[in-house]
Image 1 (cartoon, one colour):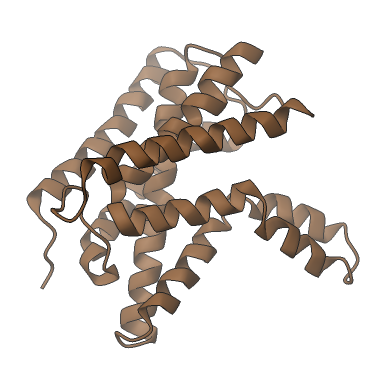
Image 2: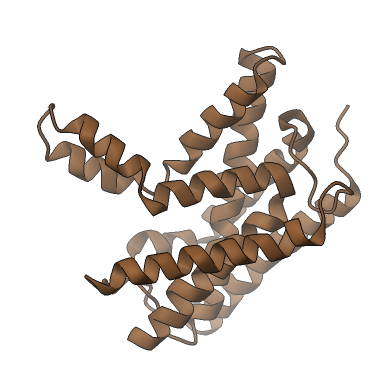
Length: 232
């Protein structure tokens, strides 16, 4: 029997409402996005499909053994403070790495604020609320028949954590010799982009959906809004 509380559904509805509100902002204020994939993310079909997928993830939360966002076992420090600190720290690391070879990947301020609020919320719904939850539940309940939970979670966490770095990894692998491929994989396993996603998955397991949205919002606030605004 599913045990998701009404408060969790209300919280998820707020996240979906944020996506819709930010979409309306850019309907009223049209702009050019940094990448074609980002422009596509603002389409109604993408918003509605990811929102529906996230709802499936919320429904499967108990079957993946993930906490609800307002559950009694999650403190406000775990829910808000620690994810924000982690996000700011990751943002600072990303800025320092970019200083050596700056890349222009930021939307200009002040539209960067609604843009990255949208992006943070959409990405965490897609990767964690849907992807990590559904994959963990399928592996644990379906493949391993309620055994080997740790294997199920970490397999799902690594798989979903590859979503962001994979395009860069694939580009390097396609241009490399077969002998060099293992070295590329090992190198990316220690890159901040992959490690930050693994950490985010762990925080989601420990503290629920709000914590990972807070983490990504804090990261984007430093990397895209503050640093990107200064560069712009």
